[in-house]
Length: 191
View 1 (cartoon, rainbow, N blue to C red):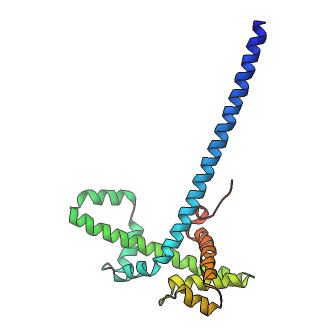
View 2 (tube, rainbow, N blue to C red; view 1 turned 90 degrees about the vertical axis):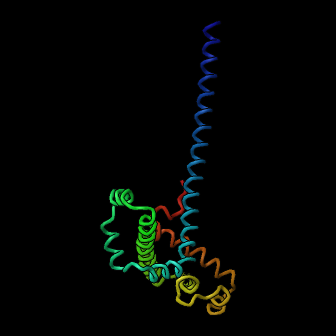
View 3 (cartoon, rainbow, N blue to C red; view 1 turned 180 degrees about the vertical axis):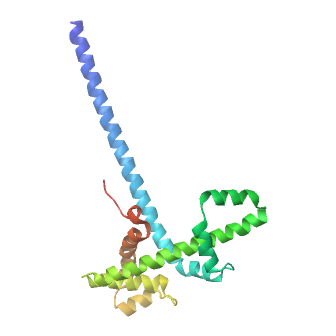
């Protein structure tokens, strides 16, 4: 009788352990899915943020006191150890000036990346069999990158479409641009 009761308790413990493990696995999977979605959402927001601020970033680089060729040459030589070592040797004022220079360096690199990815995006849109892909490129270009930016209403008039379609095109284009801007981390993945 005691042996039968012990087996029953073991069976209950085994079933409880399996249920607990299954619940933990499901919780882990949900948290992982949430983290992946959060990373994708951040990349998508960052894509839109970069596009919205493109002209401002461009002005920052064009107005920087540092010469562009010096910034690029310095950026190529930069590494983490050099940055940390140079920070120890600088006064607060020099550190502030160095920080501005580093910001300009990073901005130049980011803008060069955006320009190249937009060039690739344009090629992909031209190669697409979907005419709305090329329209989406034009919408993003006119809204964010063009020297004289256009409003959503102006774009809608030129493209002969509703203003809501302009914003929908931007959302779809940004989804695709996130993959170009951020690589695999910019793509929405389902597990």
